[in-house]
Image 1 (cartoon, helix red, strand yellow):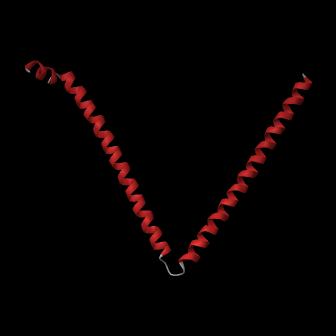
Image 2 (cartoon, rainbow, N blue to C red):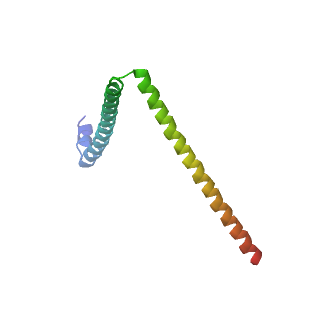
Image 3 (cartoon, rainbow, N blue to C red):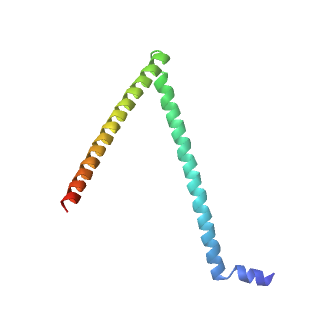
Length: 106
């Protein structure tokens, strides 16, 4: 038993144990803070949604207008993305044509 205790209290062993303990504490603290942040966000968005939809007016009407506004914004994003893709395709085709003419000259 004394040899085990002597091994345990050796400075190198203590350093390794302290390092393992620090890694374990870091993992636990990181996980704890992640859970706390997620819980705070859930509570915040829950309260914000409650106060938004409990405001004066008809709930169905407010929900319908919110969905229509979201649908309109997403449609704009899709149109913008399509325009960007067509622009990119045009640039690629111009580059290919330029490369083909350059190859023909050589």
